[in-house]
Length: 216
Image 1 (spheres, rainbow, N blue to C red):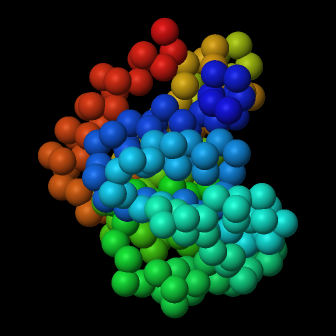
Image 2 (image 1 turned 180 degrees about the horizontal axis):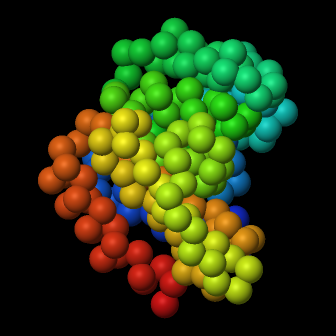
């Protein structure tokens, strides 16, 4: 299922274009109907590997049958309490199980909310590109950066955020207003503390040029 028939899959066009502009392995933090199959399909027939990690065993069981030479799935031993302690269990799992792996792309859509903060802090200087779905929650609450302005249109809103001191390069992407699933989008953060500003600008320029086709 795609963003065209499921409005909350707003990350898909931007994640797809990041994949188109990278070549290495991909880590999915939090399995999902809008990302797991899409990532598998996109990487199929390439030498790129997909690793998916998930803390909800019932949710993970929906995808375990997909495991093959190109796709590894792991259970993260963490509860769903929205605390930094729980979030750090995701990082500890990565350090104990995947520390030798290099990822070009890390897609973060995990639960609870603070697990995404912990994974962002860990990977922003390790992976070439980090992508976080539903990102507006973080600057709006001051967990990552801050919200600097809000644009409103017909009960919908887009934020502008400042991540100074958090990560060197970043862009917050929204679908067009008509494709919003709810009042806040939701938006998708694309960022990197590894790519140079020139490299990141070239990548986001390619994303900007390609994404209009998704909404034509």
